[in-house]
Length: 306
Ligand SMILES: C[S@@+](CC[C@H](N)C(=O)[O-])C[C@H]1O[C@@H](n2cnc3c(N)ncnc32)[C@H](O)[C@@H]1O
Image: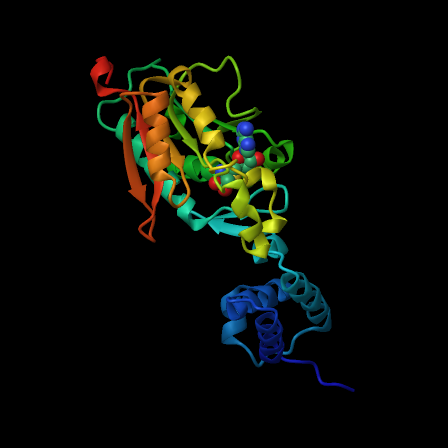
């Protein structure tokens, strides 16, 4: 009878297979997949290579490694992705949230805190209205709501999340429920924004921004994600341009929009803003790689409403 393979041997084998398939993150991927097959944290796999790998876990691992070798993202295989310190359910219905999008959430939290801190809000005053456009798995809306709950601001906000994809919205609702925020976020299927919404104080959006011509050059893992979540049209800014035109009606005077953009899109966005919304303010915030990643658009300071 064959002795059971150990966790360490299975890990080495998985690393070798993933490396042979061209993965640049073979060890990390293998550790995550072995841990997922066993049902433990990755640290346990690293700490206890001598433990025997149960046969059912070994069989699951073969399947997981096969999927990864074919290019499927580890997050879809595990069904979970960490974002802004929270675990999000992810699958092919929506984009896997990216680490750089945490900047969008941080800036959103700072803007809400800035608006709601200080003088107490008069009883009966309107709640601070926020919309997350193109919510995908709900990463931005749910992470923002969770951060606002921790800081005691959630009760003073009204938070809407939209997506044109019914599949993505269903996943976003699951994530809101999973984090106990189902009551805190309204979800609406809409092409950018639903009609008949009163103006918002703050709009956040991580819309698709990959130029259509670049899609075939993305890593194979991206081919498992919905094209609807990636394709930003000829120059990547097609949806952002449409959104710009909606801002004067969508935002309360003095309100602002935080938009995630792709590398190299800051200057084209500036040109589009000056053309569509002359006089509006633009501030750019870099991600950890030093790339302008979030654009903040604000009403003209001269309109006397700020
Ligand atoms: C880049 S993904 C971002 C998802 C999520 N906000 C995140 O940061 O992980 C863009 C999302 O915008 C949605 N989307 C694409 N076109 C849209 C439109 N016209 N109106 C609303 N949402 C749209 C896609 O379905 C997708 O979920």
